[in-house]
Image (cartoon, rainbow, N blue to C red):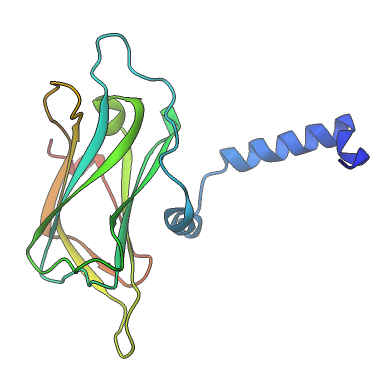
Length: 191
């Protein structure tokens, strides 16, 4: 180890820099990079109070509208709740899977960190990102999302399913090209 890094001033500088980086709000460009590269799930902190149900999984029920999600495109969702340090990324569809045809429903399950409650999930934001990989002669993919229904569940318990988020439209959102995103809105939640 370099002797210069062991000085108290260098230690303080490194710690302050790490704290500044960790607390900085991401730009939309950084968010796109985070969606594409962050590991998941990150552990949540806080946990559930005694007697408050905890959930281990989310089911994303996504309805495609009048413009499909191609087979060579991928889609991801990022779940974030800064209050409990929750940051989790889940693949909805890889670029090697069949496309999501017009006017079809697709259900995808994602794992959650231990101790996650419905209130924490309802306070979270959900960002769906489209990553296109056009074949030769194709333009970037566009995708109409007509509905997003997010349900919390725990298959190892008798807890009832819990509606976390529900919104729809015609389309709810039209994602155009590589990196396009849809971000949930608390005002549009119909759970």
